[in-house]
Image (cartoon, rainbow, N blue to C red; front, side, top):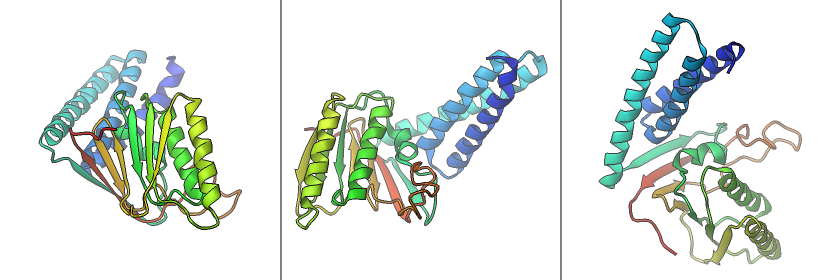
Length: 247
């Protein structure tokens, strides 16, 4: 990294670490830990590039403080997980933005993630089917090696039934080309919404995957980038268990 890139890297580090502190103060510890780790790495990159000794000393002190806090959070999370007490709640307010699947699920994805269970009664209409596809795409891009996705949903018995079955069949075939198996099951009694990862994380979203608002127009901001798409009010409850689901 050249000296010309240092200011930009410093700005990025400050932004990420500011977010880490905000999440920390809101007791959203898993998310804050991810931000602390990213921010610390950015500061370490800055430290390697700068020449000024006083600045180096300043950043070393900052890095030390953030690393100590990150370790405290990591220890706290480990204890909570081991005791089966981990529970985190994220409230998504009406019209909020910044909650794409990439952002929401990132803190809970790890290299050990290989299998995912999605229970959501509303993967039926066209926008809901696209939501599920977008979720699958997020998993393919994430730093994990998902090999199997299980979907349990309700079957559309109305005029959209053929649209649902053909769309899911196409998603299944497309995932197969990426060496990922999609297992589809239907239930007429399913009500609860839950996403379970085999690394222990369980994410329960009040509205399931369908918490985005309809865009104001086909060429309006947020139509393509879901970080900019407005959300409906909902609550996300995150748990961790050492006893993961099996096939």
